[in-house]
Image 1 (cartoon, rainbow, N blue to C red):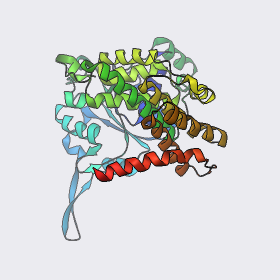
Image 2 (image 1 turned 90 degrees about the vertical axis):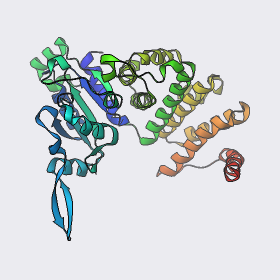
Image 3 (image 1 turned 30 degrees about the horizontal axis):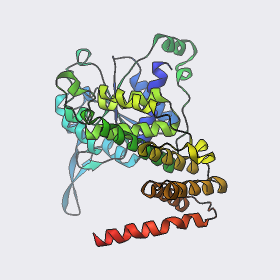
Image 4 (image 1 turned 180 degrees about the horizontal axis):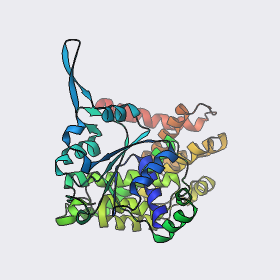
Length: 369
């Protein structure tokens, strides 16, 4: 996979996961053009904010008198961003060129807030290496740790093809967006795998680096959470390990390579294989949980009576035959939520009610706590 295709798929997965990204690359290599093209392709409205042409006063508003009170009205750019809702991308270009804007960017990247106003847009930043920027500097660690850092590349062959055939021709084919239930199941499965890996490798969990790396990707509780959300979204989209690795390492730095290796060695069975033969379920609990969440995503994408019934049989098997009801009930809960969300209802078999005593016991324990 060429670097450009991989990076576009990384951006797509980050948009689906709703994880902020920053692109690091030399000026004039197509970062802005690609983000704008991606916005058009996915029907997102793109708002471009260029750091080197802004100051703090651009991100506020002006006071007006309304109903006898003084209120602050946002400037047009901010108002349009807020009104655009989720189907928008805030593209913060040259994010490392004006130091006085770092508090503004921290609010944008960390809280999706500009001044007094919150927004729901996806976030993509871009930065040139400090030595190639006007007034460039490394990002402060609190800002850097809220982003997935991607090294942006445009290889010669891809650029040459764009020059000959038109740059629309180099844009890769992107997977359709997954249903919310599918995305959630894959992200929960990936969170379980991340948690399992870090329990075995606690030294990779939280390491604040020194020097230049503090302004790029490094591992923390926050950035590992970003990595899991991204990897789950990439998996839900059907993108391979190469795309997942780019985002994971971009979130937590070199420590992410260990997790990618762990992921590649967890050769989990496909949902179809498990539903065909329960004996193919993995023995380790983290892998078992991840497999059941993948089954939940499969049911959401293949909503029919046979798949639904077989998934409930699987949940009962895990809870009763394997004596792992705590894991089985997670799949059962996911299936029940799907039933509530789907407009086309399926027949409910008696297997479903096998989980009722367990749920009632949990509720009793909660009341007694």
